[in-house]
Image 1 (tube, rainbow, N blue to C red):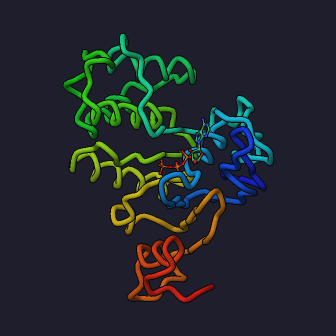
Image 2 (image 1 turned 90 degrees about the vertical axis):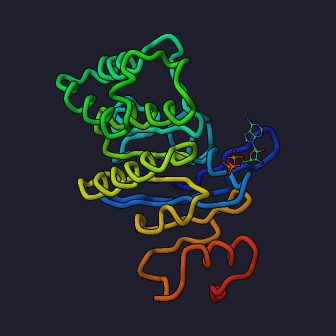
Length: 237
Ligand SMILES: Nc1ncnc2c1ncn2[C@@H]1O[C@H](COP(=O)(O)OP(=O)(O)OP(=O)(O)O)[C@@H](O)[C@H]1O
């Protein structure tokens, strides 16, 4: 569903992503890990069509800059981008109009309820707390029922209810056949919810790890630290 081939993104002479290959299938959760500055957000913004790059990205075989691809893709950015003078309810209405959704009200209501924003419908974007902004950003991304969703650090700033709800939503989306790519530093919080993990270091994918490849007593954290710091109990592969 999400296919990245040989993606290189340079900022001037600095190579931020270097020949990245990555794919996320329908009904799969891919986790993207890596230290600060590894290139995760650059990769994500490139996939979402926000940056120019060398290589190719397709969403369900559609070139990522095409309208068809954009209709299929939901994006939760690292920092919520809201309209300060639109209310919570108006944000959903705006998304519904942009995506030409015909029936969305019940779904919108349900999303707001799940993320405890149903009593904040009249609050303006600029009046929301950081966590509320993050929750609304998630609701906006999910409203069009995208086939592929990319989330950049979606758990940051969420309260425990929001974290639990988002983890459940991720699991439900996977069960419904959605492809999800989730970047996070909170490895523990994704431990029940991943199929494949890409570990990025200095612009390259240093390790692709499928859940079934881990030993019974081995955690994703072990693999992460082995790759990023050369310790933990991961055999050199
Ligand atoms: N607009 C930009 N211009 C120049 N360099 C940039 C720009 N954006 C990012 N970089 C550089 O590219 C590298 C990758 O940054 P990126 O934000 O993709 O990392 P990240 O893995 O998402 O980091 P973090 O975990 O801290 O969010 C860093 O060295 C960063 O300084």
